[in-house]
Each structure stands twice: as structure tokens, then as C-alpha cells.
Length: 337
Image (cartoon, rainbow, N blue to C red; front, side):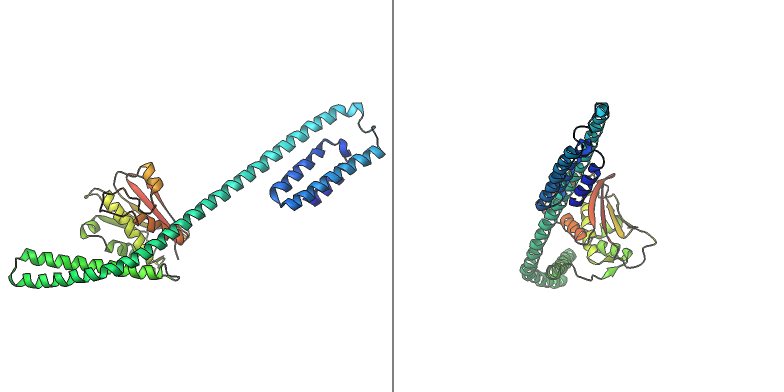
């Protein structure tokens, strides 16, 4: 920019010197230097501009005097002054707009970085809480499992058949709780692996549906693009999809289907979960993904499923968003490898 000011001085010297209306462009150069570079260089550019303009005035007054500004050139001079004013105004508006846009984009990026950091802190806290809960609950669950086994044995000898079925159901549910706690404990200790095991999309869909009750699996419609045959998604993605499926089944009518669709989207894997519920309000859609935010009745959810799914997608460089489309459409995009 300092070199530009020197070159601009040379151009003015051969095109009228201080009488050239475009001498006002010195102000634009100084303004751009102040907006785009450091304070030191802005001062240097300002000094170059002031020195150049002073030299032009001194040189032309000594060599040409007042003869340059003759009366018959006065209309042309006024017109070119108007042209220089228009050009300077357009330049200032253009660069001020660019500067404001850059500031807004930087502020948006900073806000997103703060939000990601906050979600990471929440996730770390949840993982610690999960590990503690898994440790504390393992003992009472083991006691319940032993008591259920003894109840099953006793009832099988002299109790009614319904009591035997209830005891077996208790044991089945306890085993399921212990399996979930073991996964929570392992995940809390390891987080997302550096090199996760990859699954084909069809296997990913079926794994996500494994944890659903049989009645819900009957209502689930899985649609996987035919060209997706190679392993392209980490096994951890199944847990995120399972959370979205749980919310979809809770939001849908007991007889309505839930559609799980997996298809390619450029370098990304697009996973859609579409329910047939009443859809999200604007407020709910805005807050979806906040930890411990839920619209379910007390005891039916903690408001962590969407939060964990969104955190998982963003840590991989993907996204999770929601749309109202005859219900709620959850769209998660993650890298295919």
C-alpha cells in the first residue's frame, strides 16, 4: 500500500498534480491501510500520502504557478471532481461492506466455536457421570439379578406360570440394563476411537434397530441406497441413529411407521429418520440438541439423545438438523469414511 501511494503520486504528477481531482484518493489509500493492516503500516502509508501530496503542491506551484488552472478548464475540473467523489464513495461503501461481512462471519465462527466448546464440556461431564452411574448401579443390578433367578426357581416348582414369566422378564431386563451400563462405562473411558470400526450402511441400520422393542422394529421401514455396499460409517454412528429412532417412535402414533433412510450425499453419508408425529414447534426446533432439554413427560427421557447425536456428528465434521415434513425429519450427515 505504501508503494501504491508512491505510484499514485507519480501518476498525479503527470496528470495535473494537486489540481487533479483524484488527489482525494489518497484518503482512500490511508483508510484501507487503517482497516486492513497494522497501525504502524497505516501511519507509514499516511506519511507517504501526506508527503506525496505536499511535494505535488510545492513542485507544481514552483514550476507551473497558476497557469495550469485556466478558466476554460474550470468546467472540466468540476466534472472530474464529481467523478472522483462518486468513485471514492463507491470504493468506501464496497470496502466497508466487505469489512462488515468479514466481521460478521468471524463473529459467527467465534459463536460456533464457543457453542462447540460448551457442548464438548457437557459431553465430558456426561461421560464422567455415565461412568460413575455404571459403577454405582452394577451392584444393585447384580443383587436384583440374583433375586430374580431365585424367584424364578422357586416359582417354577410351586408357583403359577405367570409368576415364572414375570421373573424371567425381570432377569431379561436386568441383563439389558447391565449390557447398557457396560457400554456406557466403556464409552466413557475411551470416547470416540481414533480409527473406528466401519460398518456397511445396511448393517448400521440393523444395529441401530437392535435396541428397539419388537413392536417398534415391526413399524420401522429401512431404506438403504443400493450403491452403498462398502463399509462407510463407524459403529458409533449406530448409537446416534438409535437415539433418533427412539425419539421418532415416541413422537409417532403407535400404529404409524418410522422411516430410516440411508443414502450417499457426495462425500457424506446422509441418514434420515422420519416420523409421523405432530412435528416440532419453532421453539423446540431451535432448542433441539441442548442437553437435558426434552418435551417428553417426566420419566420418559432426559433430553440427552439428540444432544449426543449432534455432538457425535459435529465431532466427525458432520451436521444434524431437523425439518418439518409431515412430522419431523431428522437429517444427520457424517463423512463416509
